[in-house]
Image 1 (cartoon, rainbow, N blue to C red):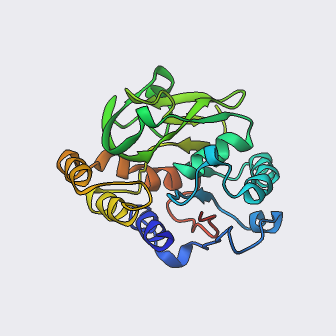
Image 2: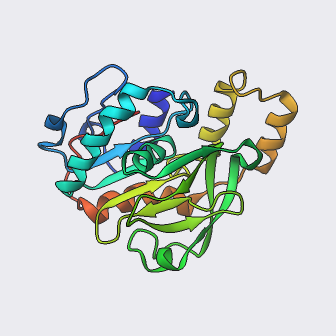
Length: 235
């Protein structure tokens, strides 16, 4: 699944795989040296862990000072789903589990007033489709952060520290319909996705081209069109 996540981020980044460095934080140490030549960081999604279950506590603890240092160095940072939740926790926001508001499939995401003028989201329509797969929700933003997008079920779909290149998303800008179905099938047993539930999810899926533009736009905006992304954190 980590391979699929990396491949999709590359696909929608507008860059080649050779411009990224993958770091599996479950196998490699997290240290400040990773930031020394980093053009940007991407903390990717993962369906294997839940913050609400207390998973991977050592990695979560190590990410807090690492992300604080990245922010201090103004390294552009994009967190996606679990990666965005890790960022939220690292900067003292709060995550809670609510399966009644779980979002699996394609959902409409709506820009807030702050999102309408944000450089990353400004060129997107006020309402756009995005792929989601989560039951943990961001219920309290880090101090100083602003919410940029929301959905009917989850109020905080994206946040940013104003004036800083630091963004956390709950939705998946790297996923499309095929990628979402691949994950639904992969995690079917773990998350008790029956054939009937799978069929309902599949029937509701729509492509999400506006959301898919965000990975490339983030890198173009904060790294530059011709500047390679040298290092990336891949959860």
